[in-house]
Amino acid sequence: MTDLTALTLAKALDGLKSKQFSSVELTGAFNAAIAGARVLNAFVVETPEKALEMAKASDARRASGKAGRLDGAPLGIKDLYCTRGVRTTACSGILGDFTPTYESTVTQNLWDEGAVMLGKLNMDEFAMGSSNETSHFGNVINPWRRKGDNQGLTPGGSSGGSAASVAANLCLAATASDTGGSIRQPAAFTGTVGIKPTYGRASRYGMVAFASSLDQAGPIARTVEDSAILLEVMCSHDPKDSTSLNIRTPDWRQDVRKGVRGMKIGIPKEYRIDGLSDEIDALWQQGIKWLKEAGATIVDISLPHTKYALPAYYIVAPAEASSNLARYDGMRYGARVEGGNLTQTYEGTRASGFGKEVQRRLMIGTYVLSSGYYDAYYLRAQKVRTRIFQDFVDAFGQCDAILTPACPSPAFAFGEKSGDPVEMYLNDVFTVTANLAGLPGIAVPAGLSASGLPLGLQVIGKALDEAACFRVGGALEDAAGFVAKPDRWW
Image 1 (cartoon, rainbow, N blue to C red):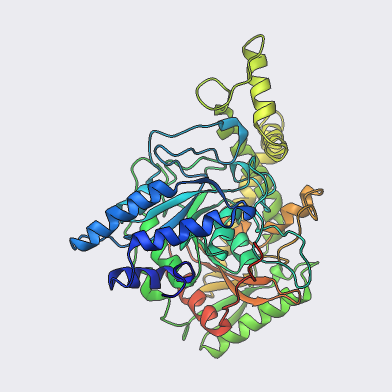
Image 2: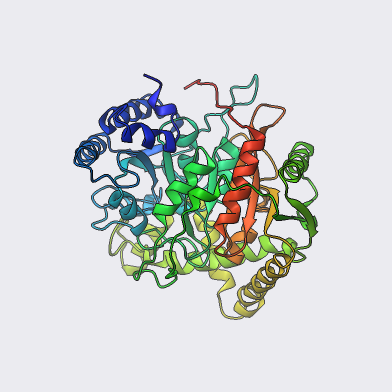
């Protein structure tokens, strides 16, 4: 039998359907892979017994002809999603051993279609980070390494555990979340595919909140087709989320192979930033060439307010985090540090429970929302956000989708950027605009750097036009023929 853990989600589902193997066999293979890869630190909670129980139930459903769309498929779940009876901490010390009594809507959708949970995946604390260096449970290590170099590399963040586990064949696919690029950037760093859908497509109920107007659920998978299969199940209307859109979820899987003939692809001149590496620029030019050869028309476009996106994001996101994270006070759930009075308990709990990066962003957020600064910072940032959205509206009058690099560099080593928060924040320079405008964006692996690390391209679509992302993403995947995998060292 072939290595079951190397299968794509689509092939695994086909194999389960044709009874080439059972879900119990598939799940057992992944449980063993996870146990043998703990050095990567991708999982913070392993649930092997629960996974085998779910797999047995799945095999029984298949035998009775009642299989769901994902029946028997073992998945990893980012520690941001509440899972009934399984510890959920958003990788923060302040939540202690919090074990939810309810299920997030996204994960419930997965279980309703028969998916199997392998465990909870490591991430940056409260999803605040671009390198998975802020987790209370330590760094996730990227399974990829530079040629001739054993230095540990970041898998990107905040969904570092999700990306690393998919790249290292520890699960068929994984849930992730994207506030400023936290699906697309780690996907690009690990040679995987990640898509952030339009804001409101997937319910945020049961997801630990970071910045409510920016957060969106999405998958990280091995192929564009796999990401379409998973996203279809993750997305749904949910009355428990006031921002959830009451619209039908399309059959995106069929869009992956439609091709790009007749499509207009926009190339924004503002994304040619200072400091963009030559190999990233060369990959971008190669992507443009591939799409031309596939029958697309290339159109130069302008997104004039792009240079204000990062500053606006790093005002809006911390401001919303400051409001959302006020609930962690040691009173109702999670960890508590006893003090002499109520104020001391609050202060002690928050000082010991939150990590340095979370504290930094909470201070920024509280400052920009404070009296006398609200208009100068937060309100102005929201106005810039509106301008960025309008830039996209104008651009999409000339094109059907936009092609950009996913990240300004390949994966970097631990500590290379964490000493300079501003340099770290620049990792999100190509991705934050889609979050500020609420648009769908997909990252697709398209080549290797000179040092042998994955490089990705990003496709941004119109609101509710994930189909265009899947069409262009599928065409890029076909043209790139990216099949590289990390050499196993763990």
